[in-house]
Amino acid sequence: MSLHTGDQGWSLRIFVNDQMIRIDKALLDSVTAEARSLPRKRKNYNFHKEYSDTLQRLLNAMEPLSYIQPHKHQDPDKREVFFVLRGRILVVEFDETGNTRDHVILDPLNGVYGAEIPERTFHTIVSLENSTVAYEVKDGPYSPADDKNFAPWAPKEGSPEAAPYLDNLLKKLNIQAVT
Picture 1 (cartoon, rainbow, N blue to C red):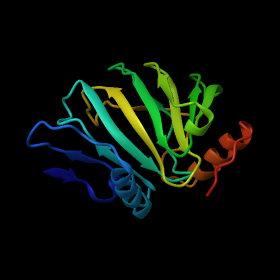
Picture 2 (cartoon, rainbow, N blue to C red):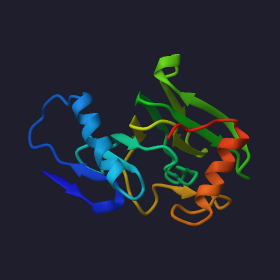
Picture 3 (cartoon, rainbow, N blue to C red):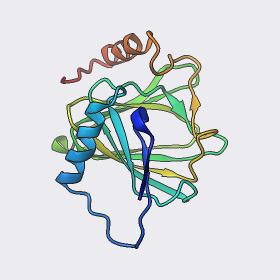
Picture 4 (spheres, rainbow, N blue to C red):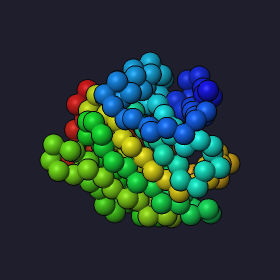
């Protein structure tokens, strides 16, 4: 059984019986195909059984330059971890005023597999290659009302300013996405 929200790019899978969850090429390809077909060019595939689970686990398939507005998880405070399964992902941390504090490119071919973002830290991730998929782990429970505190200095997703903001961020860090 699953809950699908159309073009929002997320879904909740409900497992009837407890069984091993296999993360294989077929699953990555399926979620990637869904991501490509959506306006946001990304798709979450949840492994947690309910939004109330204390550990949220999901695949995050995304195509290059899909914009995720910088945000932090505060009140309630939550950590977030990203592991790259395929492709390359830029993870960026910001200070409270929007200056880049740190960044890393997750790239399994270069031996950089994951990054953990502390609670109360503004951050974003950017796909740098086609068919990129991350395994994401975050403290739960998930509540859309208070899950993210969006950075007031960054444009909203879908706004005309989002693409230039992302382009400028990549230029400042001297990073190029392969599209």
